[in-house]
Length: 298
Image (cartoon, rainbow, N blue to C red; front, top):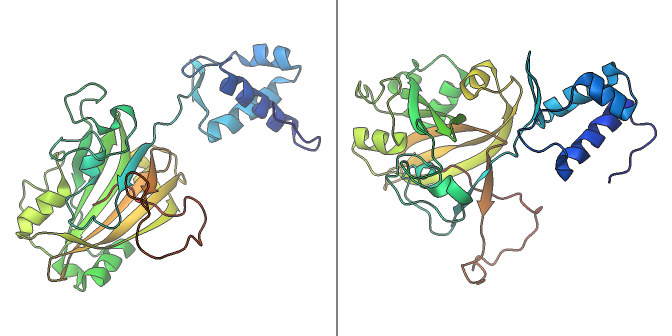
């Protein structure tokens, strides 16, 4: 059991005690927490302290308060581990579709837990999972549009944009924005609700083969639009993966920006060959453990 400093507020000490009971299985995932009066009597504190402790655990995504029903223990977050070989991955095939239970068009990636690698129609998937078009906003109205134009070396008026969302396990997990120097795009490709791998669709519309140029990783708080799209509170931490894909001659042809619910995915970058052979890059490990990574690839 964790020790608690005497100067820690009482509600926070109670929150930790409740967390310990949850971790021990006293309150299992999906179960209803005892009522405020019951917890107040059990721990010998007033109801305000109980209310503050429960709110603390709700902010930590441990509990879910259902108004008029009760407070429930959230199940552990299911996090998709996406494994990428950084020395061999070159072609941009929308490889998020290899890692998540989407349309099954591409083989699943290695290193995924449980049902996460199963194609649609097999056990463990939920109807409606996959990538689908949300909107095709006019380009030129946002800082993201300006950045896309800069990365692609084009004027904003030369670009088309498509926004999509990826659902997994019945929940929206990834908000995606794509910019391409192709105008106009086919109306069917832009139809709201259209399912399928958007990277492959955009490459097909442009008649090009896409290769990775670069990818970068960051983190932001969800703005109002992304919060609504992903069903999370504004300010929720989102992982950001963005970058450019190009044609084989190096011409920038796609800029993508993905915002990923941080509770739903982790980035895994392996530096050793299967069987334990070190990667022959001659580098040294001068960074922090877990700093590298690769997530839903484009």
